[in-house]
Length: 313
Image (tube, rainbow, N blue to C red; front, side):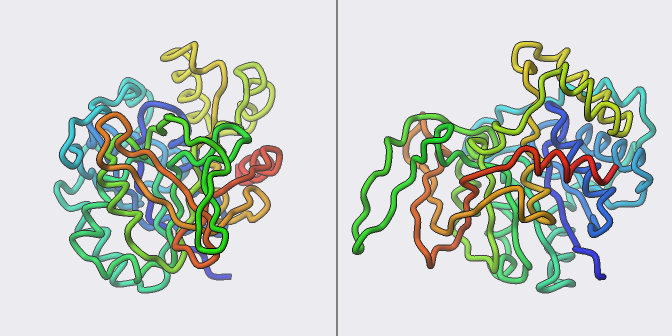
């Protein structure tokens, strides 16, 4: 069986979930991780962390490219990489091709038309600029899976549904922003405006339902995961003890849906992004439409995820 070719764009270095997603892709028997790009501030230290994870998973030769550190028309709010200190403990590359991330993505997609899934688990600065630079590129992908956006509040859907060409509100939108969508809101809007053969988004409203307490982690995944993921998880708990009362597996949930249809259920429609409000820049809003460009996750099975995730290690 042919493996699935995947390009990954990541902002690894704060939480532990990016590293979990990378390790999962390295270990999955149906995954061919053909390259990784990093995004947001400290792109090179983030690339070193990617290298450390890939090395620990026995995949030291996966191409890694530091990407854009700046946002489009706004300040970068993720300017440094808190987990850089972990590099002292793990073997990694020290040098990377500089200023070539977008060219690498463009060339790789064009050389493999219809074969590549682009997986994004960070802000969309790289991808927004890439798609504007080469507008044909989205149509050459097999599909795109994104961890980003926020489309409901807990179990309450906040999108609208078309009825007889009119829209009515199922619930109030609220004012909550997600991290990946709002860090570079203009880039998010640029990506959403393109049409792809398949575009699936797993929002923070879904992934926040998939978590372990530190005690549960110690008794379950910590016994199965590679040591580097255990160390990164503990570093996250130490870095933000209040937030880390739950270890949320945001990014690997989205990535695991590439291979396991039982983890999330998706609804077709269109995602729009707020770009005029200073305070709500990057807010994602979803409207059901059977002919829409996007598919948004509206339900998740945490048990199915943890079974899938643990199975590859």
